[in-house]
Length: 568
Image (cartoon, rainbow, N blue to C red; front, side, top):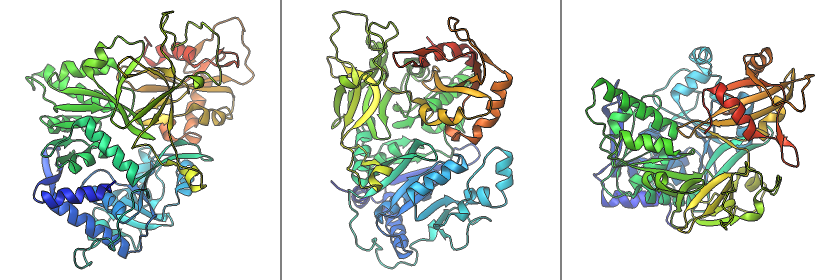
């Protein structure tokens, strides 16, 4: 399998003058700030990779990467891979303790950061960031080699190298020491969840990353000459490898939805998370209401993923942008993407569950019926069982969805660093079945994971720490679904020393003294991605099953009215 950077270089040789990257800027986000042709992109990647090697980067080096999508960041990302390094994504907004634990686990040798982030984390803007609730780690003090993008600002550590200047002094064609990058070498590390004692990160090689990009090319049916307007690398990179133009918006869609709406109009494809779709549709509907837009225009294809995609969201999208083909993409960081369906099929499906579509080419599917409720089988005939269709003649096999394919991760960071074998499959934790057409239908979860935005939250990792807070006897995190497919995170606590009527239904209340006290303290014990949207106090936690575990479904029904979202 050819390395993804080599694929890009092949495109550059055949179409050197075609625009590969187009970055928008300006006050309204409508001005083209920079364009880079395929020839220019290939030359910058090669020279930057050579500059990295000249500065001491070695194959296998990990690079902590905190740069937003824009041409300079895309060049550096590809150059790191070209030089044999691995890009490590760590959320700088996590708690200082969790950030430190993730850095310790990843052991990066380099940090690539925007000059502005250096200034906000250790320079004169640190106070401004703190006043806005941003407790950023001190990037400048990390014991690594430093790279920065943008103009120098106070806070950029002494000796840091500006990315734009790397490789300028390297003579000739400046190939990265003439070495061919290995497809099975580590290329991408993404932290997905975990605690300070057990941070969890997914590792992809250049081969599996290339497999991921090939699958995304299937999703968007990408072709030469097309425009992909997105801030997501997973659609932008396959677009340029296919010979198209990746248009990069000035800001993330959620931060500037009006600008994104203008930019994405008429594009061939785009990719958004559900929350960004909601922001886009809000803008388009508001413009229609005020008469500023006679008819809304969107891209030819809009893929939605990285979180559950609901029928309600697709129905709204189809109503606002009827000329756009809406796609729902299913997958996980461990294997992405895995399946796809279009809005018409998902909405029309008469399935007892959530249709996520047909597996993409190369994706293997296995339904492990033995894993269903293996930990707690519950009570036979439980009317609340989401896998029970109610039809005695229904012989479908329901079990945990297990996936394999070209984009399957190499494994988890801790496992690989400990010398354990690479992953051979991914157990999704989703309960599913395949219908007669081979489509995957989800009917529930075998785990308690909550999905908010693009963050996976595993309650079991955080609840023990929450139960140690003063005055708390029990603590349970639940996710309450909202129409756009996202979930609101609610923390339910009970008071230490409280009494309960065993026969009475639980009563939940918001705004109690305990709920307010806990809300003031959660930031000290939780990753910011897991912070609850609401803290409530319950008289007691309902339990279910033979093991008497917390009945999370019952809690969701109890707290839904308090969040303003009533579960259907």
